[in-house]
Length: 176
Image (cartoon, rainbow, N blue to C red; front, side, top):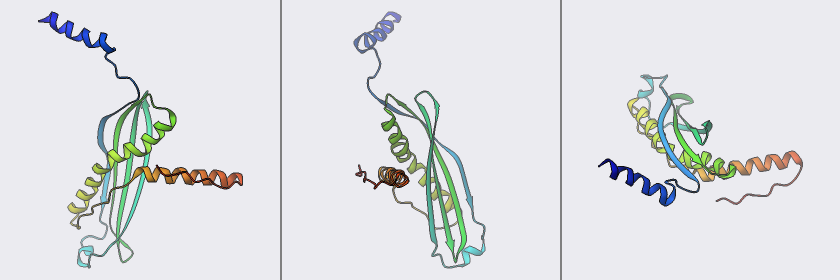
């Protein structure tokens, strides 16, 4: 039986080296890094008609933690205001550890700014909704976000700022 195991292991290695070729992307872990919920006007806030103004903010950051391994953190903040006063404030930092091997710098930047946040967003959206409902407010279902469009807009803004600093006119970058 041990001989068969040894032969089975040797066969794939000789056939192709047992290693994938080309760029590799893998999710190692998705986790909640930090979260907070505040309802500073409770219980008075529940006595008013619920017609809030919702402010929403989104940020991402990434950090290389070892060769080909990156942590990406998606920070979502939602604030509901009634009569210019905060009804609730919720912030979620949803994180993930991703392996990205054999990508060039441009591809790596795009993966960190678009693919990883796209993977993390549904987890963060669910956590925000859970906090809001547990705070006894109506559900807050955030719409999907197209991180590719946000990335293209940010690149366009950086290009315009760089060209503005040089006194040149900006050339638009076509959206993907």
